Length: 512
Image (cartoon, rainbow, N blue to C red; front, side):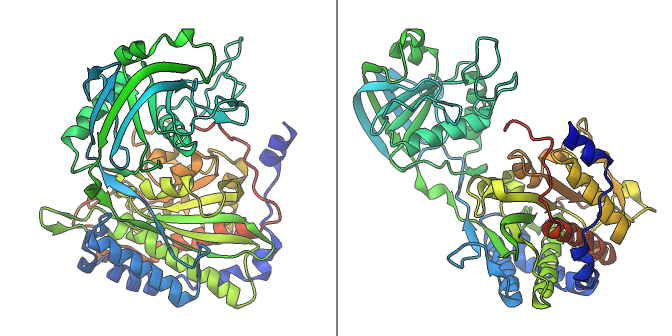
């Protein structure tokens, strides 16, 4: 309570380091001219709309890489590679045959799967029961059992206390192990990591929903992209319905985790490997001087929607504006380093792929972070900052802010103070409303950090008539405004990187 009161009532003093180091001089290196030069190249027809996995996207990542090499800003990865490979695939479904006790079941009716790995052919005579399939600091179904080389059977959900609260969270709120998407990803990846041959996942509450997804994917198998699951090449997983669960046995009768169920099981699994998509994030960083193992991540997405009906969607605002702003912000920090003003904390410049396909690049980064998420102080995400929302014509000196107060009161207050001190833009929080029907908070790359309790700010100019159209071209960008907004983000990152204490996360939530 005292800590919250302190945050709420204390006026934030922008630290003296920023003044001593002349941050204004470095912000001035972010210029209209350089932003325009970059964007007329990056959002040109040569880049073919930068669709994920296409030749234009490869040109985009190589262009970004070249800028960091020219600036002398290091790659984030220890091996010196600026690219973080993001494993993607089109949603082609495997061919699967499945039988228990010599009874054959029908794919799409009795069992489902959405991916796998290579080709699998397994015959076994027992299945091991592993409860909820959870391995957490507060609870584990695997503490006394070995599933290496076995076929594992788990159920959905998570354990509760006698009073109805959840054992893992200790509250009435479920943990990440109950969220449909995260539970599936976590439980499947976990049992694969533990060496199992395969997984039978019983989730009666969501099987009908999964069947809808199966039908959609079957019809869209060559169109819909997704992250490849993080599983071994000889591992399979199946979601099973009531009839298969009953053939295995009565779950309530299983005395404990590790129960061996004696039954014959046959699985033949064929996955077409030709649907893989090659794509990558570009990640550079500047190492901090005093707190190098704390990180400020500034992000933007490098991709766009490619070519439609023979016309190139250049994506100058979405998100060419964010991409070139991030490059210029990196240059400003590099100039500071050259002049002996290295930031106290490390700055990570994260250009993510696959945003237009489903936030895949940022999702993969947060699942496989180059730098630990627990040491990530904040994420400042830039997605469309070069135009003016028609709703705000006549009042162009603004920016929409989303998410600044969701996890850290202190971050929100710092953001406000920095703006008043340096840029004096109007902060419009219209889209920060929980009831915003557009749900922009969930629609850009910052969200993958926020759901991991990393405080975020999403900078956004709003949509316009050229959104996701070939007419989103560099000549329509308002470069003076783009420069001012980019400077604001630089000042905010500078303050977060150089203040004495790491910002406090006072609104942390249970992982979704």
